[in-house]
Image (cartoon, rainbow, N blue to C red; front, side, top):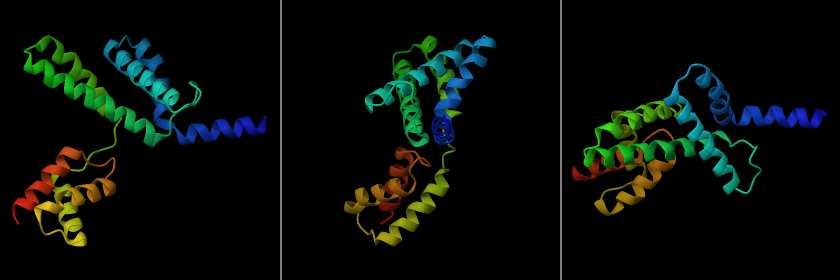
Length: 167
């Protein structure tokens, strides 16, 4: 009995994002917020699929870093959908995707600004002694490792490209 209570407490503190998403579904239902409900259900389903893919029981929770990966993947899918719908001139489909993206992004950690990323790139460039464009991948890899979860890869690549163009 004590062991199972301890395990449950550990699970709750270790996987707050996954549990938070699950617990917000009833409030979205009560508020009749269809977009939020649809978005939360899709995120929880994606997380359950991830748990099963990792060969664990479906009722287990993901760790926060795993859950953030799933949420980022969902955000990227929405961004891709928005881009495709805009290319196809389907404004009727862009609106709902943007609404879902806004909800999804509210669960992601705050991203670094472009200026902060540029400063980190300059510092890492000096630390690694990068002096040629051929070292761009090495610099991007080191930066992404340092800024994991804090910066978008596209922004990091743009900052590195801008720095290396000045060489």
